[in-house]
Amino acid sequence: MVASTHWLASAVGMRVLEAGGNAFDAAVAAGFTLSVVEPHLNGPGGDVPIIGHRARDGHTFVVCGQGTAPAAATLGAFGDLGVEEVPGTGHLAAVVPGAFGAWLDLLTRYGTLPLADVLGPALAYARDGYPLLPSAARTVSTVAEMFAAHWPTSAAVYLPGGQPPAAGARFTNPDLACTFERLLAEAAAAGQDRDAQVEAARRAFYEGFVAEAVDTFVQTPVVDATGRAHAGLLRGEDMAAWRATEEPTVSADVLGVQVHKTAAWGQGPVLLQQLRMLEALDVAPLVRDAVALEASGVADDGTGPVTRLVHLVTQVAALAFADREAYYGDAPDVPLDALLSREYAAERARLVGDDADATLRPGSPGGRAPVLPSRVLADRAGGGGVSASAGGLGEPTVSPVGLTPGDTCHVDVVDRWGNRVSATPSGGWLQSSPVVPGLGFALPTRAQMFWLEPGLPSSLVPGRRPRTTLSPAMVLGAGHGFAFGTPGGDQQDQWTVPFLLRHLLGGLDLQAAIDAPSWHSTAVQSSFAPRTHTPRGLVAESRLGAGVLAGLAARGHAVQDAGPWSLGRISAAGVRADGLLVGAANPRGQQGYAVGR
Image (cartoon, rainbow, N blue to C red; front, side, top):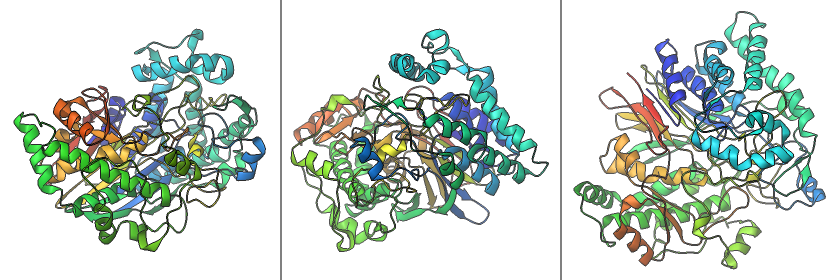
């Protein structure tokens, strides 16, 4: 069973399973395919966290494909440039590309097939073409003027004949195909041993021709979101020194199951905090009442269980994400045990009131005092923010200079043996970083998530991982389990909350829980430049009902109607209690797909 955000990736993953590969092989093949067919949402030079579960011994793990800040990326270096915030586009935001290395690490440790079998489909799509998504065509059209004026290497790939391609056009990327061919040639030259072939391809990428091209290109200044041209700080030595790593998941026993996420170098634990608080608030009866009312077809008048549930979940999110701002990062002293304790959750849950709260209220886990960026404190003290109409919908809003609040891809796989993978590839967006000449792909701009202020858990430090929003997930226990996740930047660990509540507590199957109307808070500080938020902001699908939206507004929420089908692109794949495989994909955008047999 394979479910992903693009039908071609799901089909490729299923092809690998049919050929005898396992879930890890299929995830790698699907991931490489996503890097070709969703270039506005990820790329081979992007980032990817992966959660895997090996069925034969119950081993659950994270492969970290989040690249680190370059050795030259110091606070002083940015100060010398007169840059107060890492720009969201261009060379300065580049970190080590982690996605390629992470997929290879997963293949080596847990896969069974040779590299050519899992990279081959992506190579074929890059060489022979695929139908360009409407959203990708819109993105290219939006940034076409910038490409033509300032990023000629991107124009050469994405403006064939000097014009943006049409939605649905057959799109090819010959340079990317050539890069994949060269990597496979390096692998084949290493002999017959599978692992030696994979390692040869890794060296070619991180120490060979790919790293050399990156090193040369980033030293050429390009215009970025500051409006000025800057060279980059990433060097070939940074790429050579980096390797994907395997590490334990962070998990919590909550709502009758065990939920696994990455550690706090990503935002994953914020989902666990929300679920802990909702459990402390005994949300189960309210969820069941809300699901029953929605199924009955009777509208909530703004005082019923649906309204109360949306309000409750939104307020809990505000509390959990306040802790994210104060404590999360690639730092050694994140107080995760305290943040995820039931005692702390109960303490935080008592702060939830009947009305929307506009204050940023991080807690004090284990007696720790919160440390917040001065920019966040100034924004909140001055009542700063942006209007609700400025963004926060399901599809990212891309500006003419390539700024985007961040979106990505997702893939879930389960195989006949019960192995499972949840992966969220992202970064290397075509709109955010210029194409590296001759390689056909762009670099990740994840450094924009660092603060250029010392002493914070997410301050810029050379060799540190940016606090990513990428957030794959795994549920185990209760006789079943499933991998799940969604694109969506800061919304990833918001959209999955009502999905889990409706499935685990409300009795809906995976597909029905995905299809149900969703919402999220934009009062959460954005992780992406320029770090905006909307005081009391709440974006909701209109299918919740006019009465619900009015009732939420009456509670003080700044409600934005996002239309009927717009929020989230969740997919899931797993094993039912009776052993049958299950999968589900998001209908929003008409491109997610689940397939299995």
